[in-house]
Amino acid sequence: MIAPSSQLSTAARTAGALHHDVDPASYRAAMRHHAGAVTILSAGAPGDRTGMTATSVCSLSDTPPRLIACVNRSASAHGLIRRTAAFGVNMLHADQAELANVFAGRRGIERDDRFSDADGWLSLATGTPILKSALIGLDCELIDEHAHDTHSIFVGAVRAMHLREGETPLIYFGGAFCGLARRA
Image (tube, rainbow, N blue to C red; front, side, top):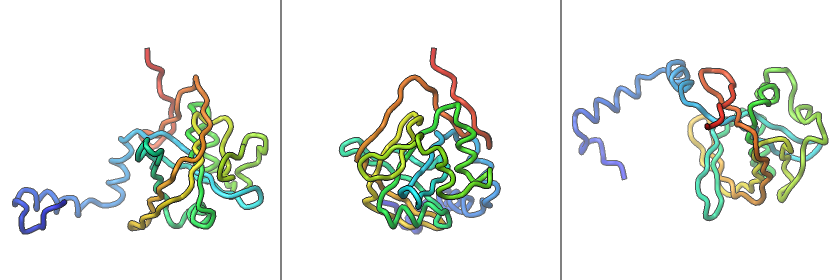
């Protein structure tokens, strides 16, 4: 529980006030120093699919398997995730930076056209698209949603997964996609 502001020390109130003065551009620049695994969030079925590149995905619990994904409400995936109550989390490997660019909208390809390689996708429990070549493909049922500012925090129950071994993850760091060096 967070203490009411009247109970916070002067230093805590001052530190909190400093956070309110951070402009969005400076915050984005600072967050480029936070390395994140690159995923494609996917939703829908053939003919009505969409997906987006995202780094705001993380595990919530393992018992039962749950994760969270933060999605801008203006993203094409947002409405489809809500409507189908399902989404896929496809963690990319280091050789998939071009695919990350496609799903980030940097190549002018939209919605279902991003899934042009029909043999590259499979369907598991919920029917949402799962990328066969991803390091990890998690098929999630949407079980909760929390609206916050410009984004929704989607909570997914992992219903099925597809796992490939032996590849290194694609990371977003410093405003660019890069591979992660293997451990010795």
